[in-house]
Image (cartoon, rainbow, N blue to C red; front, side, top):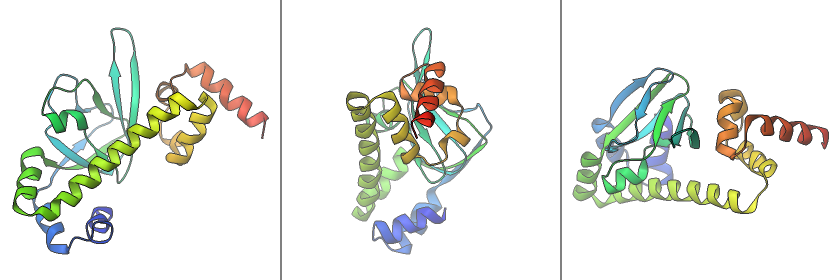
Length: 191
C-alpha cells in the first residue's frame, strides 16, 4: 500500500486527504493460487491493486489459452475494457501465486470523481498505464522477433522467469514452450 501512497502524493500531486478518502473505500480480496479474480463472461466492476502476488490475464478459444498480460506487486489489475464499458469480459485473470488485492468498485470510483475532480488524475493514470502496456505489447508483435520480445519482457518485468512458468511466458510471447527453450539457448550461446 506504500506504493499507492507514493502514487497519490508524489506522482499525482494529490494530498493525503485524497489518499485517506480512497483508502477508506478499498476492499481486500485474498486469492489462492489458481483462483480466478475474474472469469470470462462476467462484468468487471473493479480496479484492483496487487499488494502481493502474481497473476496472469488470458483469453481462450476452444482448444488453447493465450496469456496477454501479467500483474505483479504494485500493479493495477482489472479486465479494463470490461471495467470501462461495463460489459462482459472475454478474458480471465488467474492467480499464479497466493495474492492479496485491494480494490475499489466502478461505482465508488466514479462517485469519487464526481465529488472531487482531483480523482480524475488517478483515473487518467490508470488509463494511461493500461494504454501504454497494450501499445508496447502490440508493437512488439508487429516489430520484433520472439527473441527480442523475450528480451523486452525481461526488461519490463525483471525476474519474471523466476516468478512465472516457462509455459506461461511462451504463451505470452506467442511461441510454443519448446521454441522458447531454443530461443533461450541461442541467446545464451550468442552472448
